[in-house]
Length: 329
Image (cartoon, rainbow, N blue to C red; front, side, top):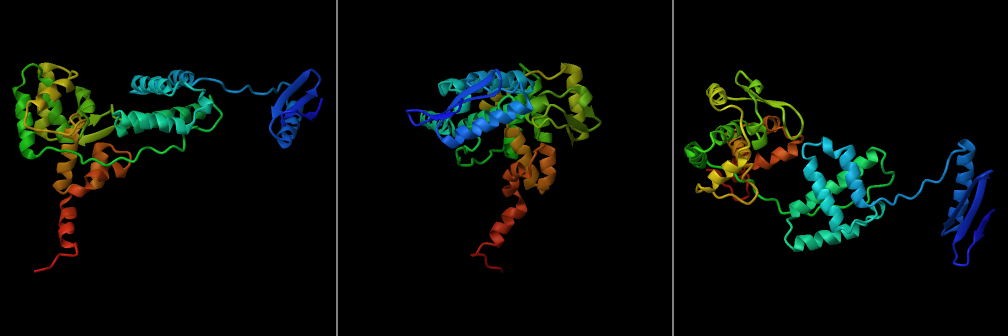
């Protein structure tokens, strides 16, 4: 039992640290072989039950299911996330998870973007994959570095956020009021415009979360509870609506249909958030403070809220006054 050199140039370790406990393994270098032998002897002396941990040969799809079992199902969007992760595993050919190559992920991403996948969705997919590996390592389910941890998302051209003018707000509310098939969209839309809430947050409101003239959002994306004051008139309207029509139902689809019937044209993908953007944009244009807006919208970081800073009247005035062509008088 010793370290011997094999005909192919590798080094073979055959060590029995304690009687009945024998380990054999091949290495590329003699130093690696010596380190393994020394480590095996030390580990067995400290713990006679120690053994070599087998290689992790689990497929990416197996980790996806494990992630969902241990963590994903606790998330509000867990079912959507696991569906995307399953698709990623399939697109990558379901490799051994520990051996996932970032270059392969990048190559598949490039092909998919070339075929029409949006850059934002491609970045979201990478984010889900990174998050899965990080969470499993945090749970101790894997003991290796995140294979895609150092991959960078695609750098995308920032798109301006669309918002409605006062005239467009009036047009939209009139169209919603004229829609008789569902009474809920017009009230949910008013709550969004008055508080900057996401459609799902406003739609999930219950009567017990209306305290006086304050709306309390508890089903938020950030999982934080936040309160936003509203006018006495709107609070009265909401209470009357609930007494007459009951709790809000899922009515985003109706809102989108009504929006399409107006003269308002929005970039793709902004329909569900246009009311939130409208609140934030008018708040800043009317002199609201950016930090106050952050708290109202529930943004975890100010950088998200800064997307609206360019709409500030002070910001616009300074652009005129401080440019190199400005002349006083």
